Length: 233
Image (cartoon, rainbow, N blue to C red):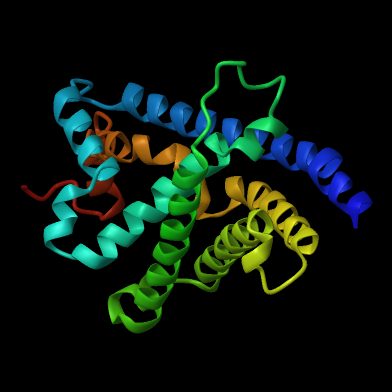
């Protein structure tokens, strides 16, 4: 068991992390390139940067949704906070990243880490329940979406039981191996699933704004395609 754990937390983790970072960088660079190209082609390049920044902040901190869908929105927000904070600030994870993170990098206090883990797991289960019971959520959910949420729930659950062997229904070392392997899989899938929005969400509102700044002559081109170039607007 120990040999498998060392393999999972050593070479396999480094491979998964390298692929994750590399392809996230490529996805981000591609998104920035497409945005810049669309802006350059636009007939009107004057963007309302303040409005874009405000809209982005509203999506990153969706307090307005708490009045519309309070339970689902709170669960979704907690889930996102947990999966963003725990990988980077949990003491055990920081130890794995020695040499990459600076020596002053902070870690979560054990009680805070446990609370955040349990809240995140509960939030994932709430989101899964909402996707299973709400018609609008069902229509937007795919098998991949549900599978990713189940994978993240496995990562959280196995990690909690590995660090609390007295409460674990299974062997703590086995739980640790499951946690590391499922975490590695989550890293590998991040650039290729909806998890990629962890880096692309800040660009969403900018992309929407740029999309409405059509290239010069686009109206005439549309009229030609529709064979209506001689008709009045």
